[in-house]
Amino acid sequence: FVATLTGLVLALAGCGPVELDHPQVGPGDALHAEWVVQASAPAAARVSGYVYNRTTYFAVRVRLRVELLGTGGAGLGVRWQWLPGSVPPSQRAYFEVRDLPLVAGYRVSVPVYTWQEGDRGLSGAPF
Image (tube, rainbow, N blue to C red; front, side):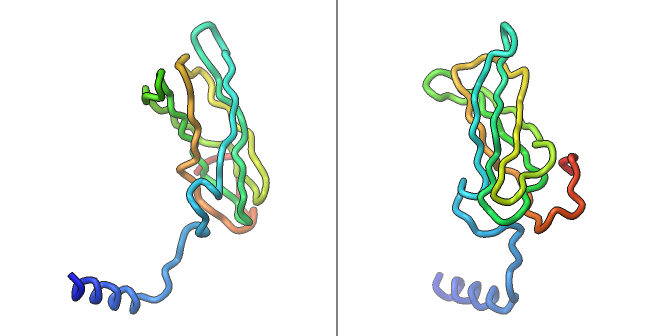
């Protein structure tokens, strides 16, 4: 095991620097969402709020994950939605997810995004 591990370390050391697609920030520290839930129809809900960016990079191609939770926090389903536009450095961007089924609770996370330096070429499209 030690010989294998040593060989792996030596092999990786010769590969040169590794490029990261985003800065190294603790999980959940770079981007996070804050939201509220409102009834939007007799049998539907709307989750709206802001995605906050705590870095010096633009967050682009941001995709929100809204978990539908039952009583006791049991997962009932997931809805994915693209955030329109980008989240500028040290700022926030508004989002709304409509026509959600009425459940006991919701949890919003921001697991998908790409970092970009500067605002060149940003558009409202997620792609």
